[in-house]
Length: 172
Image (cartoon, rainbow, N blue to C red):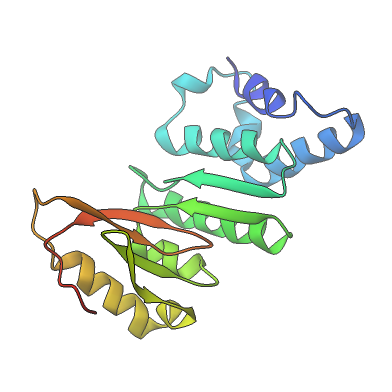
């Protein structure tokens, strides 16, 4: 499927043709590189461009809640920054965002509130996680882990989640 077809299929249930056209333009304004690639096969795009298509297709739904699953995975730092800015723009436009993300730094910077879950138990929570001290505590918790351990989750919303090993210290 082409980039255009991928974006259009996101709006398949909508009947408001004028608003669909407006949202199509909004997506292309968010991701100008996609405008140049509308006729290209989406599978032939770079990983970052494919992620842009996926986010754009989700935006075409015009949903009140957008769930984004690890939008930064495998992307270059510049693309991650762009994706983060778009997620902030989406959130500020009144759309709630549920972000499942392995990049704790990005996730916490985008969050309004945060939770760290360890073995199903909240071990850190609140707006304090979004401060530089809170980000440092989360990073310390993640970086102190040993490879090959049983996974647990770091959950920092709008909502964000990261799988980290069980061997992490139990307190921040």
